[in-house]
View 1 (cartoon, rainbow over the protein chains, first blue to last red):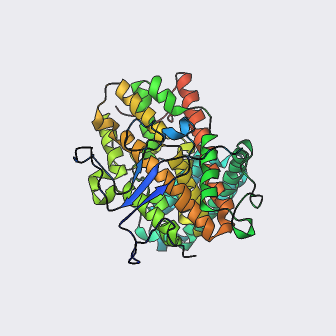
View 2 (view 1 turned 60 degrees about the vertical axis):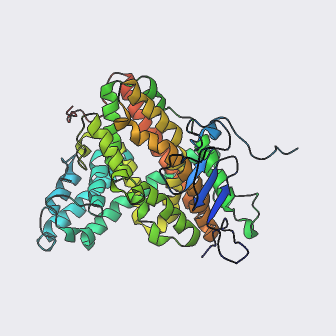
View 3 (view 1 turned 60 degrees about the horizontal axis):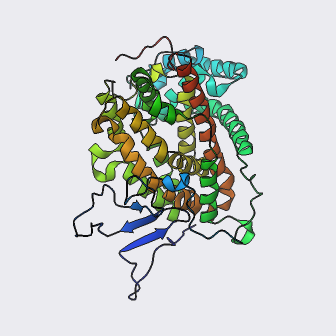
Length: 82
Length: 361
């Protein structure tokens, strides 16, 4: 029953990385762990939660965060087969 | 919360029992037992049955924050648990029937008929489970309360909308928390991560239930827990009873994860519309923050709930796939019934609340 978190990565020392990014199929990037989100000039981007979903489809109204719009525009991360 | 107004013989008999001490109530408990058996036999539609849904809601409430004037000992009194289970059994049966109908309409694979997986034994991966659930959520094209709220709802209808939601949202996340000790590994970590966010990440004023209370106060409603239970119809209570049923029964741990996944997956965009409806009436962030917060939060939660919680659970316990889909389709079934009630009432110019109990402005 005990499952390893599959997104846990390990660095050269065999320790889990301080943070991880889950690449969600047809969806956002889930970023978890210790990290900062900053503007191009280095200022903080307001952040209300530990784990965030970053927009990958470009259509979110609350960028850099995901608002689920990828589902409306049928955003696909994989090339269609054939 | 205070003991609700009775809605028929079962709730009358139940509340008569509950105000007594458990030790001195044997005769009334026997009478209640007979009453429940008789009324259940007559109930054609248990999901819409005012008296039975209110009674079940009140029995579950003993496991949350209790009822005013009711001894805490009642929570685990065997005679009362027996009555709760008598009601739960036909309620679950009706939910499974309604859920199967939704499953058929939305092309959900029948349990055991899953194909196309990479795991031995034909079991789905967590990504497969997430995909099934996202497809299911996307296929939900029923009548939309969120669009009505965004474009048409009057101030009175916005208040009604909050009154229906308040029965759950003032204890938001609590029924799913019961699943935490029933899960292990990846699914447990996922649920704890979601719930920590629901409960404000350690900041009580950011708890989603506290944000909802702020929205209620901002529009002039009473934000005390349970204040409007008497105003909402059976189907609103049934939507909360579904969560309590699946949260309190360990055997339904698959169902509560499927419930949460669909709940989150059908939430981001509707919450933007809800917020727009309140903005249209001139309310500012004090009122809309609850909805705006859910647009962002649920876009995170839906990924974790679909893949790590429900998917992680099915990878660990593949036989629970059927229950995951039951929880997912049951919430869709109840929600579409509630939506039909709200829109049907509003479009014909009627209140969606119980006629006898008007909402004080």
